[in-house]
Length: 199
Image (cartoon, rainbow, N blue to C red; front, side, top):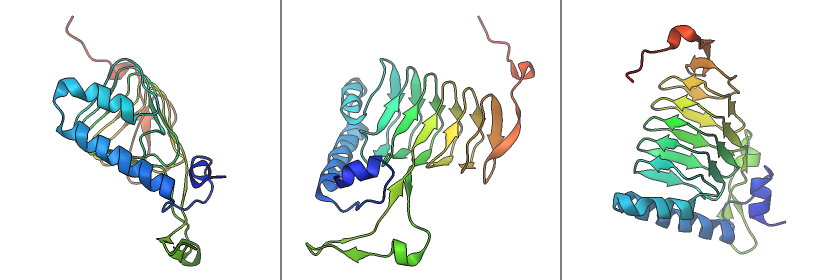
């Protein structure tokens, strides 16, 4: 089994692996190109980065990814500037999802104990540390406000709203407003939250 296969299966893997280094270099080059591109060129560059996407989406520059190939987005996805997705595991984002600025989705996890986490030397002389990753799922209709971090292993349920500055460390059910550090459910969303939209 390759280190890439171990990574996407959530097993301990060596991130200094040559194949993984090349994939990270590729996406960093593409992200840099995206961040500097004219607006009409960006969509095609992003399609080269992502593992899968629908027809309509927009990422405000700047963006940063670990691999890109493990990110799958639904229809009408919008991300404001300074989005970081560390996609060592699958990141699945649904339809009609909006991200505010300065959002981080982080799938990698490092061992808790120093003896498991410390640097090691491989047979070829390179140094590495073991890590593993847990997937993130953001279901349809979610809005994540500014400066939120979502940790690996989390699912955010349909139509929920995550308040600014939150750190999401556990699953959030559908149809709620949740906020805080750590993020917790504040209340259910109800008809009282309906706004009078101009028609």
